[in-house]
Length: 264
Image (cartoon, rainbow, N blue to C red):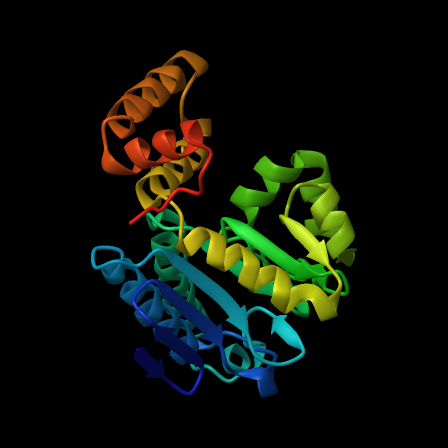
């Protein structure tokens, strides 16, 4: 069991499952520069572990808030606000990029409110499971700022330009139920069933075909970069490679003999 505990981010891994926990609950898990640096270190550990048996990564948070975004107090007291903002965003953005492109499923667990950059952190997950009491708010323009942490890329693609603009310019609160109905998050469940739902998903992913997961994730996340014909070519190349590998042999044999596959 590997552990990494900083003041703001906790990381643990048992080899197959890695967990990154935002651990600054007294400040709503707000991102200042040390937290962004800790987040990047944890993301780098996930990235490195993908070559040594990691099967799924989990992203969660301590306290009643998932993440309120940037630590505005730290910017207000900075000698050079622009320089500090550049450091925070470039560091956190690298972490988000590493997790988004990691060849393992990333599961985000949202137990409370996500605002500002917290929304970008939420959307880092391939599967996002939220308590149905969770709430979301862009919040940037209320502080005279524009969005970061990848939220404009995701909102415009997932929600459409009209809704993305509405949420960003008005800063209206939207619920987990709305986020689920819009396709922004995967599931909204009752708070008391959230742990059970999450563990079921993690267990399923951790025992699944890792190469098929990695390839499927890559195909889906890069699909908007290609026209339809090119995407068909990428799909054909990917499945042609996978069908000759041991996991597909096991999966196909298990299907034909009506047994549960055992992926290694």
